Length: 334
Image (cartoon, rainbow, N blue to C red):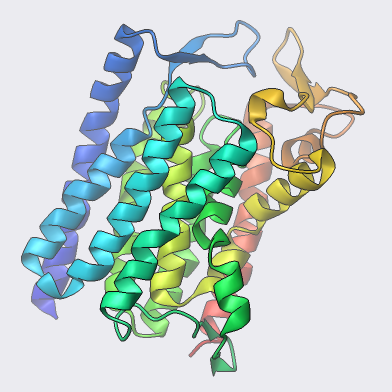
């Protein structure tokens, strides 16, 4: 066990360091080639390097490679997680450079479940599907329902995280908080390997946060948000803690549900009427556009309006509450 802890700490350190250093390098490169996005929630509308979330995926890759070299028993779950992340990230990168339709992007992310299915076929005792672990009842055996929902297990969280990433720092903050109960749940059910992989993702997000927090120096782009959301979905499946993950990601799921139900389908975010507007003083207000969907941000700003920092704090509080509920569910798994 002491050596395993040492291996974990080394992998975490590698993930954090590579992500932190690479984020700055990627940001400068994206700026140089003119790949930037407009920070629409600032009065002066600054341009920010985008698609920089690729540094999170690369940092995770380095950390996972080190982990597998030091502990070969985790290789299958690690490779499945990395393949899932890379598929989502590549889809996001394509979307960042050549805009995909909302439905196309959603369907494309469905294919990210393939590595998990292949891993299950290779080693059904290592990657278990259809038997999630839930509070009190412990192990469930689901057959038809589970397999019907499986295509959405990666695409769902990937797109939900992507749809909530609208303000500086929201993605790394909310996803970091969502990972905490996920890690605890995996430890409780005895899957230490998945807990370690989730910790690596947490370290990558914490390394990325200083660049993305308000005022953001970088944007993740779909490259980063789809990858992180997809990774959380994959970790939930690999650790068989899907219910805890759903509770932890409930702000993202709720926000996505409001948008999809209001727009009657998946739309590219550039096609959706803006639910909020920004005043000359930087206050985010309800756009009062009846064609715009109800979103978490729109509900938080209300009629009075709020600064970007205040809105991010509001989203963080909602996420904290969801994470506490998810933690309670995790503790009930004992």
